[in-house]
Length: 162
Ligand code: PNS
Image 1 (cartoon, rainbow, N blue to C red):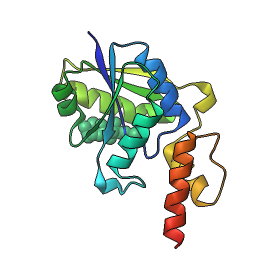
Image 2: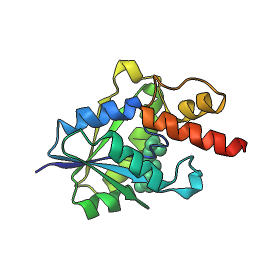
Image 3: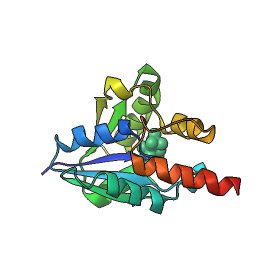
């Protein structure tokens, strides 16, 4: 039984993440989408909101479980009894940071492997940060994120304007 973790901030989840979740889930027996609770990053969405949205947008993808986590990813993987971490690589710019994380995690937990999937070309430019920036300036983000995310971001922006 191969249980893997696809970890991230998902603030917010994009079509790029969803593509990764779909493809990863087809490779493993169970895929845990690990949602990082890191208040130091002052996210747009609370971890509870991010988990709720992720559960909604992945409900039709088999073998997927959405679970929040705090602290070290290797500890979370141990707790979940997962043997593999899956990360997406968009471009060469992602590589250095991802390699550093994978090697640090491997040092701390040699049984835990990190596997990389190259992101779908259609989404290789996409990031949660860019989506938030476009939305903050009133741009249309419907081609980047699921409808539910679009709605929730709009609600946040409207609240901030009040
Ligand atoms: O979506 P992101 O922000 O690129 O995801 C980064 C994430 C959550 C995978 C990374 O920050 C992480 O694993 N954080 C948990 C803390 C940790 O284990 N840090 C040491 C890794 S070297």
